[in-house]
Image 1 (cartoon, one colour):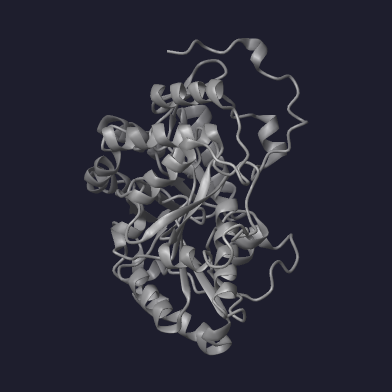
Image 2 (cartoon, rainbow, N blue to C red):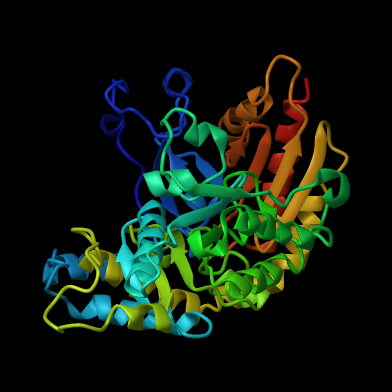
Length: 446
């Protein structure tokens, strides 16, 4: 076990760091600081354990400080710290691409690497636009997202995204973007276990958008199989299949944003397999390295890749990429992570635990202010009634009380509590997590 951090490791001044997606002033008055992690737990600077109810940020699916991943990163740093990604390569990035493609369904055979989910989404959108261009249909430029969708923070991602706070500060964003209706109807879906029975028809909203803009102008539709950051909204049964059918009917590319749902979160390597739908592209990140080294990417179907491979073979086919695409440390971390997933059967383990997990989460029905609970895979989300003095205040209290009083890390979106622990969680730790949540919900009842 790693030794506790020394007192000198704790900074005296927190002002210099402008924290992302954080209420900076409030945090710096009462910080929630972690100094190390192991297995299912973070540890504070004074070495108190904090049960990780969020797999970091939906990413540490194999748990923390896994020795095989640590060793792989250390060895790679000694052997090859960096290799340029333009016009040069290194063996492990090709090996990682092959391993990831082998996990994907259908002919999603090619991987374009980025460094985050945000970069992966912007890459997928650019590939979609470029694909239609090289295919002789350059008028197909419109991108379709969905209300309450989250696709990272690049200009492409927030343009197709549908969370108003992520959009409203940044001007008009990309032009030629439209949005499907979201899939959540509390009146008909409340307290669903897994995918709600009601809601497949929400996919038909794409027909409205096609009628408005004409399919000849639409390049791609991007959706999350489970809308994560907006509060854990599973796709209704049949919704994704219907969306695929409509895209096929009108010649529109379908992109699944699996930055959260990939690598076991819903019990499969990718949610596309769970739902029996093969999209044209899948974006991934987070779990590909279990959060250890930043890495993201796009899985692309064969016909899309092949469309770029004409012309002189000495000419760059796609004018896009990143300095750190397929970074050696990330590739080594990914290979070691994929080994753990396979050797420990973590995807299958998550699938086997799903029913018991759902029952445990749904046991919180009836607690104060709980107005809905959703579960799918190893994800839980609880909607709390907002306080009269402001939306999000109750949810914000949850974060602080859970961390400081219960030793539990969760996420909130306004007054929704979201939790998605590492896939190594045990039954006793599920009970521990739910017990801590129950006490926290009662503590913020007033």
